[in-house]
Length: 377
Ligand SMILES: *Cc1c(COP(=O)(O)O)cnc(C)c1O
Image (cartoon, rainbow, N blue to C red; front, side, top):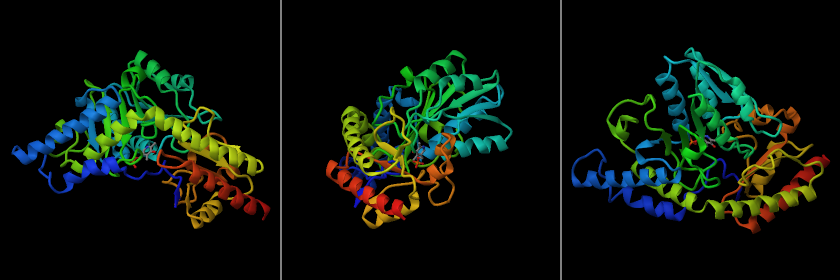
């Protein structure tokens, strides 16, 4: 199998798995228990919190563990909207966010909030000036992702952070696809809330983290016990949190090496596709992170290509994983103004450091063969 769908999920690395293993059986104490078994696991969770905090230049007490990127996004947006509702009920986001963000804003609209959705330019990049133009006196939160999960387009986070800070508006970024590829410093970026997911960076599924800048009137949305300093109730996903801590630490330590490695893979794939496919359109902008390559193969339907690739043992995606089950064309590519036909022929290849140049080269040649066959029909 050649797995080129790393933006959907990644395999847990050996190092992460080894770090997690004891916490399923030997070290099982409830971190809330005051006895020795509980204190051991509590200490382990606090070390994981330090690992996550260090990776984004935050303080450990600003990190809340969640059940994944989706919960982190929900908690960031709903928790801020509620905490600041006396100040205003206008929120700003973009049309290219992950559904974990978009559907949360739609929920808030139903609850009486007003949301402005800013579209990207044709290259898939949202302009900071367009965000600035959407801001009002009653705007309390801006949410813009760091890296788009369908195209890899990097968004101007530092620029948006500057303008939200100038106006005293809170800024959330979904950085799920950015960890391990970009340096993330919440101070330098001017970010107040930041979402991370474990399984996109060789960590486990079902665990994530939310950075919440200290001093915010952010309201927790899950209630119960006093876990996570009363910011996220429920007995902790202990092995998951340990795995997330190690995964984030490793991904951050290897950020430059990983970037260079996946860039080589992406460039090799693109060169072969360009040489072999008539009319190839590259939907990922020049400045996209190299882990994601989105291309349109005119005259060949993406689902057909993917089915043929699957039969050849090659895994890729069309649109985002969350929408590929339905026939909805990708909201991201539509927002970029692509013709529906181009969207229907768009395929996303996504790479990780675990892919090899040999397998990517082999996959690329197979793609060319399949697309040429489908285009001739
Ligand atoms: C995968 C993803 C999420 C959701 O994270 P989960 O941990 O799967 O809930 C959110 N945002 C982006 C950009 C993603 O790629």
